[in-house]
Length: 241
Ligand code: GLP
Image (cartoon, rainbow, N blue to C red):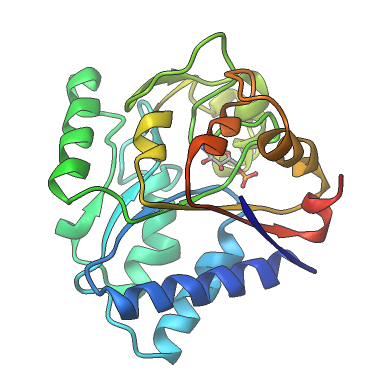
């Protein structure tokens, strides 16, 4: 894994945003995999500014988000879909037809997961998968477990993960859904390249385990060691071992 370390979370976001804009300039029909959470906020902020500054068109870019809560409608402000509309899709004017998203209110959730896998395949696969990481080493909602799911699936959230998502639900952990839909580790690892962001001391142990530890379902991100093109974008606190 190639590792870039920056002094602040803002510097991480600025540097990765410049790289993504370069990639769109080179390939206007880039297929991006995208994360939510607190970590990517400086990245999305920089991506909006850099896209405007360099007058880059997102008209042909296609996106697939990693995950979505079960039972939260996409129109609900607490959904990951609404987060993405606020942070990126709205400000950059992405055409709705180019936005791939899981629907946690679909009548048949198994079918919804299959639909998503088919949509990613039909788009030609993901060129660049951008990720955050949970303090427990989860990626998307692939939680530490005895075994991992390869493909997009319905996942149960760990109490720690629900707590870290509480801010999205007005700080009330009881309102965070117990289930979500998430790309699986194989879906993620099939992307041509992966960029993982981690900031803050709370992520340092997960980063160390992911990069230097054994490949284990107890730390799902460790499976990224099997991927030939992973770049880590860290701030100094997350990079401290
Ligand atoms: C959430 C998301 C992940 C995200 C992770 C870290 O549960 N499903 O995609 O990477 O938690 O979130 P944060 O960046 O807020 O620490």
